Image 1 (cartoon, rainbow, N blue to C red):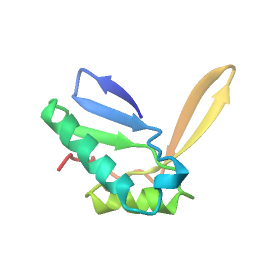
Image 2: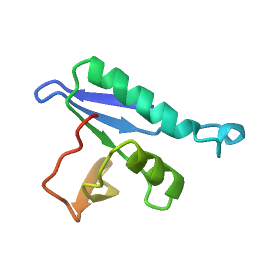
Image 3: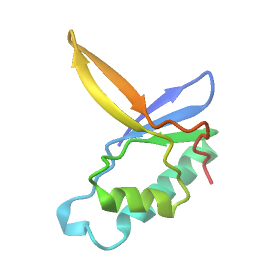
Image 4: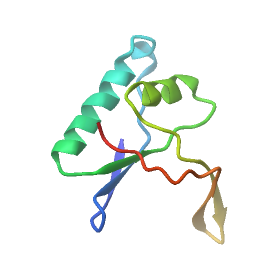
Length: 98
């Protein structure tokens, strides 16, 4: 998991949570997310943005199970060697850590 902190607004961006195949299907991912969100909350972060591939139904379900909300769909592109993210279907709500 990679965490990127924006020190101005106490947001955190969570990218690339993953379990080894032999640990999948046991609801451990939900436990991992809940534990990491508790740690982030205790560290003083106010909001967490978690990137999850839309086709990864188990990861989407685990995020929703711990109280996350979908705020949009992002398309990542590489233009002139730079990563560009285009957001679609954005909501005005932010994801709050529970």
